[in-house]
Amino acid sequence: MLVVKTVAVVNNLEDAHEILDTAISTALKESKRVYISSSYNLAAIPHPHPTFNRESVPFSLSPKLSNQMGLEATVEAAADFHGNMSV
Image (tube, rainbow, N blue to C red; front, side):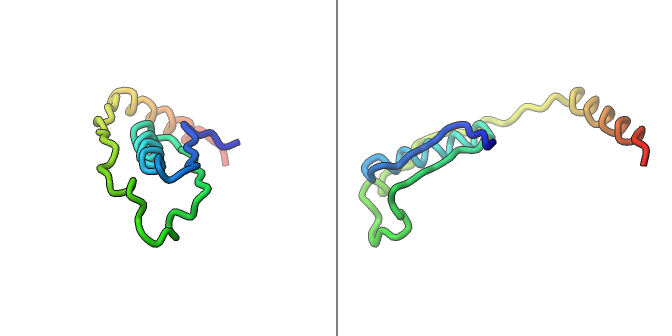
């Protein structure tokens, strides 16, 4: 079963730009998959739709914090586990 953070459905070109930007920013911020469905062949539109001439939906990615002690403990536990495995 494929689990996604959000499903973005583009049913009309008027809000496609915002829907696509929001889905992509959600995927980046949450480090999760998003499913994007479009009833249009967006790449085949001969001239960009006016809604795609707008500025991107603003978002920022905050740095991911890492727990160094937790990371080291996890690596050590994994190494012990694999070192104790019989072949």
